[in-house]
Amino acid sequence: MLGGAAGVADEAAQGDLAADISVAILRTEAGRDPHDKDLHDLVGELSTRSDDFRTAGEPTTSAITARAPSASTTTPSAT
Image (cartoon, rainbow, N blue to C red; front, side, top):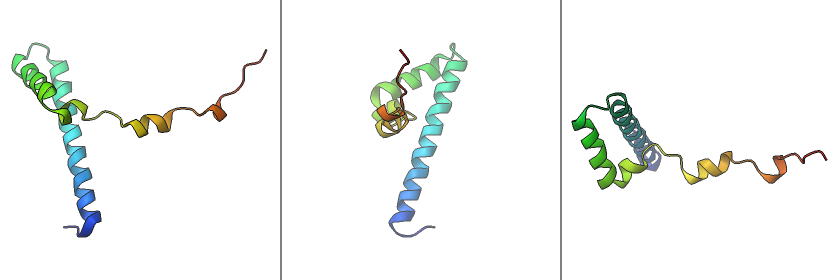
């Protein structure tokens, strides 16, 4: 068991990763079998009732911003 704040942060990150993987599996299986009404009902209910489920696996704003090209990396067009 890890001690201190670093250990708690690591365990929280692992928990978030496990949740993201679980959500991805549920969504993948629901997409793979469109006739599984029970699974679609479950994913739909979780999506409407849980902000955590709805946003799991989505990139954060900082991740999106970090990948956006800056003005200095664009090349001017030749005229």
